[in-house]
Image (cartoon, rainbow, N blue to C red; front, side, top):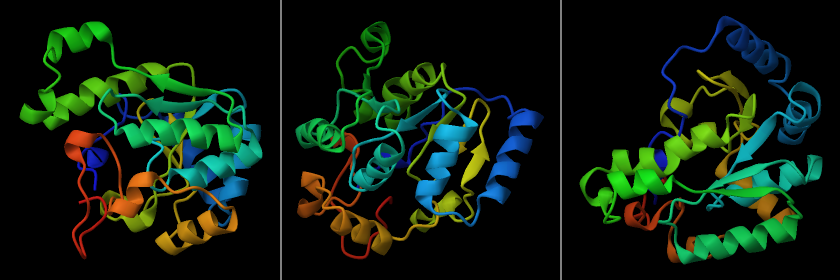
Length: 230
């Protein structure tokens, strides 16, 4: 279970989404609400945002399904992996093996600023004192910079994860981008079935009771009956 996974990773921009972006997101969500994940990805990558869209992936417990779908549409799509410096070794190994298996040709390891780390987390233990600040330093700010060249980005968020995701649309406007959520209606059973149908490798830590996997300081196995993103 990853506590850090529940922290925000939206780029730091507190201005409201502009009217044009909001209208476009609503139009796309309405038009494609009944379509499957592969078609939503095809529309986003090939028609709506060609050359201006990236996929953000943690290479975590459920990531292989979305990455496989994206590779079916375009294996050269930029995939942003936030290399926080605090990942499990198993995640780093899985990231390399999965990218190679799926034929993804543009996986980008995005690191936090060395200067910011030196100034704000010189001992590497900021997570002990302020997990939100650590997440901002190692995830939020690097993601914002990495997305500067894009108009849209693809997420793996799903309604069944609960909380604010219960009414999540397939397309939504953020202050800086349009976010595409192709797996929005998928349930855990759909993910498991997709892994089996396409012989996708599981993250090594799922067998050890980790249903959601983020940075090692903020991740622990789930207790029986506990929500996967608690």
